[in-house]
Image (cartoon, rainbow, N blue to C red; front, side, top):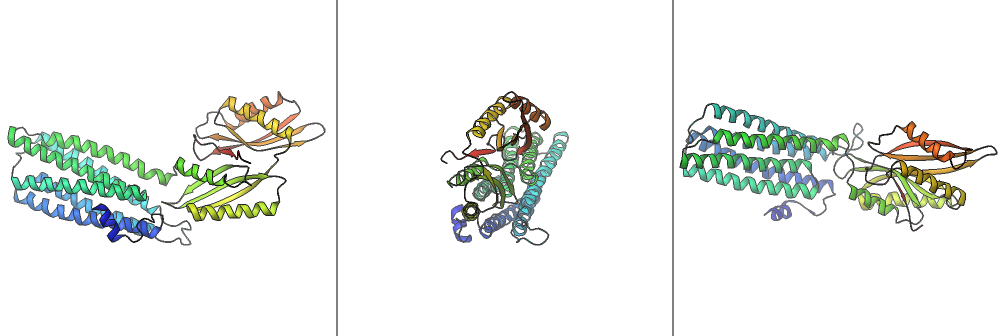
Length: 401
């Protein structure tokens, strides 16, 4: 049924990188959620009033809040699709993360409310009414919510939307809450034991925990989380597919919302290569990655001496020194300026996030090691941070060049 809805209501549904297609996915998920939750809300509130069951009536109110969450999601997708303007030159796509965070807070508050009401039921237990119609409504609600959870998770995974995944989690939590009411009703009918409050408290605690987890998940992109390693590797592989590029470093990637990527990188080219030719290659790379991967890439060109055996040998030794300190360290922009009394060894070293040594301590350790090769070597060391990932090298060399 999910595939049928996607094909019927989303034009060009396979082009998920298209902002309009992405908005259509969000619109479909939100409208289905609004309609389904309103149906559940009306049926539960009616049954709750008919059988004087506050538990069922409260569950109906919960479905009404779920419909409200779907409205928040719908508005979030609408606003995030707005084009860039003077005040927001990178677009509005991050609004989707904010709407996901709002849904997460709603889940958190519902968990707290369920815990509060469950404690009240434990302290002041009330008789649980039993009716076949009541059971049918609860079972129907569970089936609908199971489908909604799967539906939103499929859509959320397809377009990588934390908002829709949060909505899927909310539907799953509703399944647990309604199942607790159903189970407590059946147990009370056959045994006379009232577990309504206890089971509600357990489910409320789980919903509260899932709300905390979702808040962390939805706020992470807003804070600036590290890019996906597979995405980074795809960029690295594409850069090294150009034979003119001997290596690259200082790759920095920014996300301004789903499928809105901005990046910069230092690409290394042979120092004796034709400057105009290299500049043309750099322009081609920027256009290719924009067309193929949707990345607005800015490339800084670094000329590198590749045919000097003295510099190459010294660079290899400095790399080994760095590895003895931490194998995650990497050297780039290595050059040597020789003079009559001393030589300047100039290079940058990239440190991973969380590296324990201070930049000055690291530079001093490397300077001491380099002076063991030649005391007339003076170092000029710039310490950079590897913003990609602690598990991805910040400097990559083209092995085929």
